Amino acid sequence: MSDKQQQKQQQQSREIKPDRPEFRFAQISSPPSACLPPPESEVIDKASFFQKQAPQVSEEAKAPAAAKQDADSNGSNWSPKSVRPVPAFYPLERSSRFIEDDHIQVASRLSECLRVLSVQALYNDENATASLYTSENVEMHLSLWKTQSLSMGDGIVVELQRRKGCSMTFHRYARHILDAAMGELDFKGGEVSALYSKKAERMLKMQSSAATEQENAIIAIEIAHGLIMKDRMDARQLGLESLCLLTDPTKTGIQTAIIASRVVLLGTTQLQSSDDMIYDESVFQEVRDTILGLIQLKRIGEESAESADEDDGNNSDDEFDGHKAQEKEHLSLLHNLALAVLANALDVIENEDMDTEPEDTKPAAMPPSQIANTFMEGAQETTSKELLSTLISELGKASNKPHNACLSAKCLGSLCRASRKARKRAKELGAKTVVSTALDVGVRTHAKLETECKKVIKVLTLTNDNNDDDESDGQQQH
Image 1 (cartoon, helix red, strand yellow):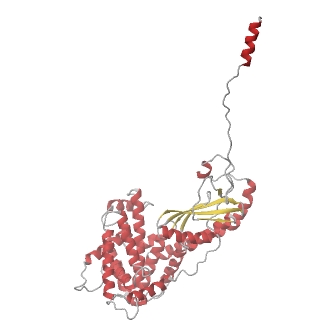
Image 2 (cartoon, rainbow, N blue to C red; image 1 turned 90 degrees about the horizontal axis):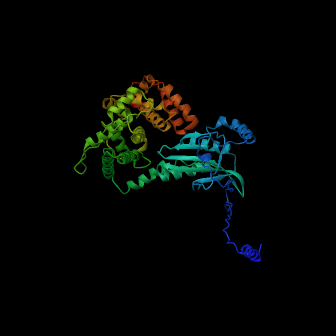
């Protein structure tokens, strides 16, 4: 090889090769949280947190939990098998509480709290969650999460979410539920609203006359009637909620509640018209017919009559099979509100003499026994159905709809205390057996249902059914 060729090869070997980019990466770990530990894996596995089955746990972890569950399951309605860890990047609600305790104990305290507060709960033991429904139609979701605090150690996070309903009512329940989870709930002091309402009413009487209060009550009832008769769902709901307030003495004046209750039960105010106050009695009759239609026929006026008749003929478990999903939910809500209005009205008329003061000026009214009998006869003529049979049927669904059953028991108790005929007919319809079954449900899950069922059983066991004086029955106490 010549010298020139050797020099050429050396020059080629000495040439500078271009640099190629080198790819490098750095793994950034998440900062440690004050309450939550860093995730075990950087990959978010959504399926493990949202699937129906709970994640698998070791046999060593199952053994003590199963033993403790067997010990506590007899006294609690909620026995979660395991608790899931808080998902990565999952923002907890502000309505949550960290508790350094075992999840079985926390679930037991929550179950007892929900029973005392009379909140319907559908428990999921696999995922340690519960769907909650209050008597004010507020829907909530309760979750238990397993977490670890760097300062306090392992613990449970109780999280409560509002899904539907009034936010103020939700926060009131949330405060009680979260306090109960920590073992700090105090149920005392809950029966002071009636005392304060009476004091407030006395102050209002000093500034307004009885005639003004009656006029305001009639105007409010006419406004509620206008809302109920509209074809919009929200307007109907507002109208029935207004009637609930007007028939509740703790929310309005005693005289206003009495006038509204007479409208609901009799379709009239029993007030004498004057030149200063002229009103149409047909409006009050429509209010009464609407309440009865929602309670007994589950409809307003003639709407959806064919669908309701088909449902009765098919004996379906779902009372509203002929309606769309949204309309089903709406009619179910209106049915509950109508029961609440009737329960308030019957309670006001039953206790009318005790609520009013001797110096109160009021028109002469029928005794409670006559009002109860007139109302039941009018309900039979309006809907062609027996009211007592409808109320007893609602009580039979206590396991699925405890709030409706509680209101039905309250109505049934008021009618039986006021009227000997109602008490006798309820016995013929087998009310004792149905009420006893509903009482068992109330003892386990619903304190208000338990209380109302005990009152009904007490009045059904009275031995003075042979007494011909109906007015004496109206004086029976709760």
